[in-house]
Amino acid sequence: MGVLVDLGQRRQEKAAQQCFGRWQRRVGFAPVVETRVSDLPDQVLSRLAELDREATLALYDLVLGVRGWGPGERFTYLEPKPKVEALDAFLFLADQVRFDLMRRLGWVQGVATETYTMLDMAARPKDIQAAFNPQVPRLTRAYHRYEDLERRLALEPAAVVRSLIPEALLVFRNRR
Image 1 (cartoon, rainbow, N blue to C red):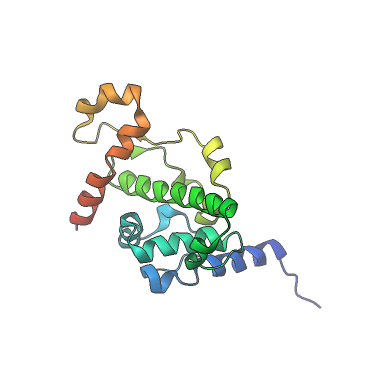
Image 2: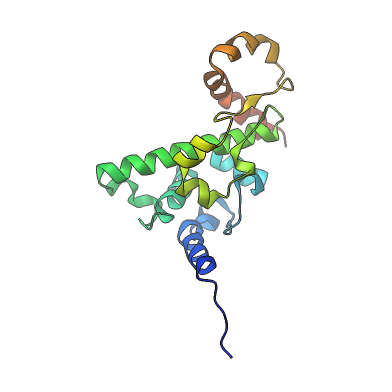
């Protein structure tokens, strides 16, 4: 009797290998098909959020790998249209990584990283942005300067939340 093979699962495993095959060397962790950003260890999330060279290449490995375009180093050699597509996906992922870091600090809620896998986020950033509400997470009252920012939040919530990224990186890095 033959063995039944799930081709969809096999394709996802192959995509995960293309996307995450260099991650152990780059950031010290190798995600699997089902991994969400919210599942990443704090140390790995912090490294990705800092966007050093290896973390940037790891995210580009994911963005390019899910499209079958090769490793992150190939980004600079892409034609203009695929390059813009890859850059948009990279920026979406970088935001999501940093939003998840802020979520772990208790500063925001409503983060797509708890719902979607990393592979999905890399493959379908525009669909996820259009479907997920809120597009930028909500700042919580747990943030120590919430009252100072409340008026600006009503006018430009995305700018306010993004303006907290440098502080969040510093606090997260120093909390251990």
